[in-house]
Image 1: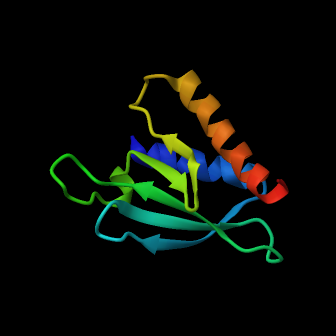
Image 2: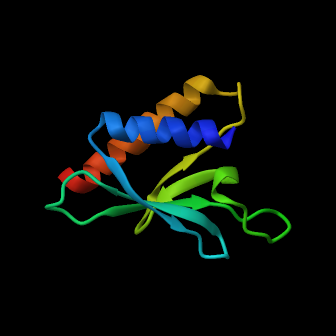
Length: 107
């Protein structure tokens, strides 16, 4: 259900005033793609990189990514859980992820 995770992530970002301004292609190594996000044109963009390196050493399409992180902030990441598993945990971690973006900008 990665599509659903991407949709929920984008909705959570939007609710906090973030906008996905550009979707960038992956690097053919471990990043399936990236979202460039911005809250204000007065500040530089942040990048959310979607993980997509599978067990066979292939780079997955962005819609099949299994998690994401904030470029330059290795301590901020989010794992996409399987459908109908750990919904409460997913929602909590999604909130924490988006709050962490706010802390980058406000910190």
